Image (tube, rainbow, N blue to C red; front, side, top):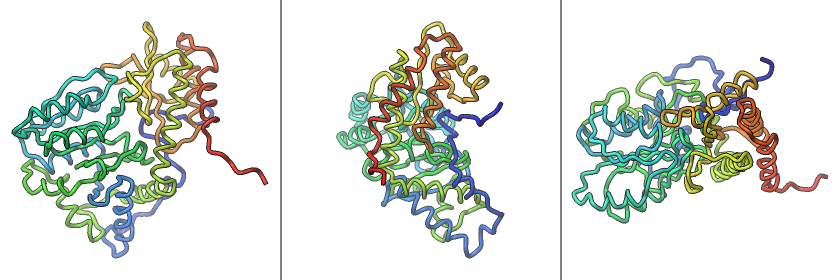
Length: 395
């Protein structure tokens, strides 16, 4: 098929040319005297993306799923009670992983399309007078449903009940795209993967630990070896890793972080919010609804679009891919066939995202879903045009 594939799944995301070029490096000695010139500044700059000055960042040759395990095993012991809410495929998987690690997992079902119920959370923490709950497993952005939970609200619930539970955040489809403030929101372990907002291939798990989480490691009794942060704490200060690192990925991460910081994290958040709103305007113009049930849940990194009754979202994806070379995100588990997803995070602008809207519209029409041709892109482009930054007059 002529032309390139248009990738609009919510990760992996598009990789900027500058990042691709940065990863094109020859093999080198990862124990050489020069290697710390890469590692030390990278770990410090990573803290700026996580918005932490007090915490410590870690880079593992792994994925976001490993990040879940790193957070738990380095701070908790088998049998510890953790509290979670299940409202999507990735909250489900984190709960399952915690069970496999022999945690005592208390989880509550939430309708898919909603996020962490803060009233319930606060009431449950208030009930836990003996502080049996040792940690909260909070998914910032549930990729499967396009739902973002209120992290400051979670911190408020902890503070208002004076509860000491550790605050873990899955920020895989959020950090580097959505507003995230590790120190200000009192997060103890935040974790991400490189394949989403960090604009890289999958392959690195990125984490920030608070001082409280680092201290918890001293008493944590979960078995750990390769994923033990202790070895990183020994080697990272000198600019090295406890084992052979993924060197090309580190160079790519260095460039990706540079791009984020050059744009400015607040500008990154604003860009994602503006692009996401354009997609939501398109959905409204199509006469469809999103999986997220209320504006307070809307995600600025992915939109899950519900197809009308009697249609299968997989047909939309089929036409999009095979006829227009457009990759859309599938519905997962409970929303399989009910939604398709447009990922709008990472390296993209209005015209790039316009292709996802136009392609989705054509694919829906091919699948028999009656939307008005041109309505979605008209609504999105008009919003983007009206909210574009002013330009100086042409000389």
